[in-house]
Amino acid sequence: MLALNRVFDKLYVMSKASPATSSLPPAALQALKKLGENLAIARIRRKESQRVWAARLGVSVPTLIRTERGDPSVGVGIFATALWLMGRVQGLSEIADPETDRGALELDVRTATRRRAIRSPASIEARLGRKR
Image (cartoon, rainbow, N blue to C red):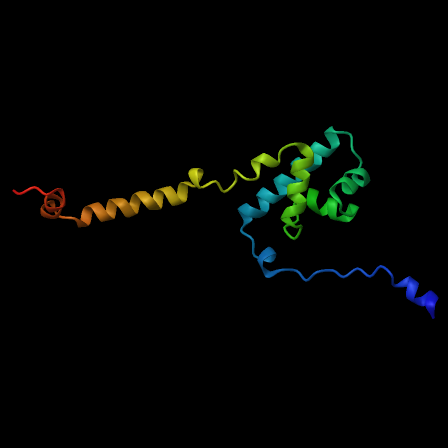
């Protein structure tokens, strides 16, 4: 009976597919695919085998293959570690930098423009403490 238990020492359980990964926008899927391709090219240019690179990442070879395909179910930590191995992890923190968030900036400008349009010249004069 003890010998049977040893067979099951390593039990691998696949995680369930997240609904979020099955409903990604096409542009996001394409960006992940391109990132995966770029990571594969970086590995090949460094003349690293998949087995060695996977070991350096701390993942299995099948997970490395999924990473290099841009599979959205691969954890962001694995992508971050791959970028770190390439010496490119600093770019990760700049992806969602608020200073370069054009959508939020445009919203701020629209909100400010609307607020300015609501104020009448009389209210502006009153705020400045001037009398007409």
